[in-house]
Length: 302
Image 1 (tube, rainbow, N blue to C red):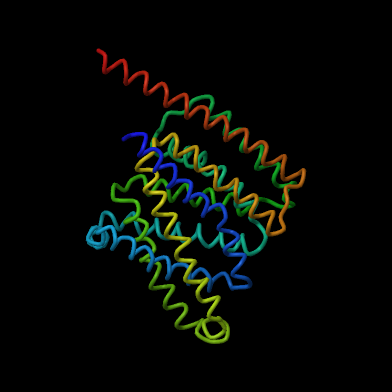
Image 2 (tube, one colour):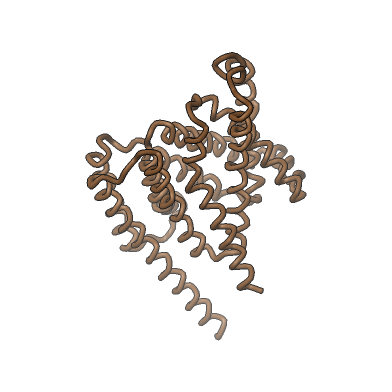
């Protein structure tokens, strides 16, 4: 039974990270759509799809409960703002030829999240963590010359997600319910923005039926991976889930190449240092997990 759950978890994770990894191609297919307008449409349709998912799961009462809890809202409101920031920077970067910088940011996100955890939640730090962070820092420094400028996209995505993850760590509610609440908080502003500023030739009036369907699909490719990730984490050990997350930025590299970005020698040097840091961090995670299992086994035998 446990192996069946693991297989299910891996399938869910594979589906999630395949969508996230190739998501830049979806925004690329949409063509020349203004980032603000695309962002508003993404929020609205993601909210619709997320609500449908919660309805099918019977979790809508849990969602409405979030808006009645002031203590929860104090965390969810800033979380929604950082979610907006992460989505907006990502969309802008994809539309302006910075997919590889996004990939770089998603590679280092787990390490930045860990650094935040060590500073805020006083999580244990080993010498391997410092070594991994050192390689990442070198990789970021090299990216200045490799990418031709300071990697603002990489830093912005990794920092915003780290803060977002730190906020989410303090929440005990269902992850899909939590993220849906955050999207719903943004939805009224997205609707008002379109109604007041984008109903004419600079927005809705210029959208063809095909592109409108693609904009609806933006909600699907946003909300469905969220569901798959939650199901995957539920059925997989955290260590396995942590390793799986590197599939998405790896696939994003190929997406960037399809869109005309290539790993030049300078960019590759930056990625190599980042990859070494990721490998060190992952090996350390595996060793720590094994140590925990050994200690748990000893305690159970006592």
